[in-house]
Length: 264
Image 1: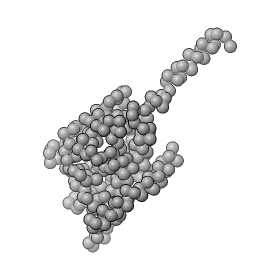
Image 2 (image 1 turned 90 degrees about the vertical axis):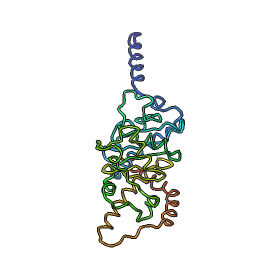
Image 3 (image 1 turned 45 degrees about the vertical axis):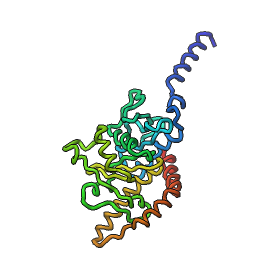
């Protein structure tokens, strides 16, 4: 091979390497790759389970900076990969956007992390099962053990009461703060005519709660449709069942994760 040919090969190789992002380039300083994978997996799980479609998002508090959080760029949940995850500051602004589009409703996450130091993960969905409960006077209550976390209550937040006629989106910090206030110390808050938000100590817990909030809502609507009084979990039953769920939810997470990984 001539000297010119060798130089040409080296030049092409260098160009290809520079155009291909490395694992390090895709990382966020101080954040384990596993956490980025959990956010991506949780997004795809909720899409697979039918809780989200083209809209919705999963986030996690940054272990490197507790005032920051991690969430995907603006992309459909089923398409999220670990490489799509970005870092956001306490006000919901991207730390390094790199010309990537961001979710308009990132302020949901920013304000909940500010208000709830116990929360390490947040999920926002437009759950089809939940929306009817956000616009009716029927409270969402736990009627079976997997949704026991609803025993603490599921308040409904109405954006119109404080902000008048809007496009129904949480598009700034003031609206996000109002939503976080309505959530209070609960695991779930319903958004009138919009969807819901679930929170948890880890991504798998927030995803678990997002799914079973939707399932419970559908079951409750069916039970109410039978036309007789519905028996819900008592406060004591809910507390005991939720304690068990927090221990065994790894089983559900492993199953759901296997399904979305095999579908790649």
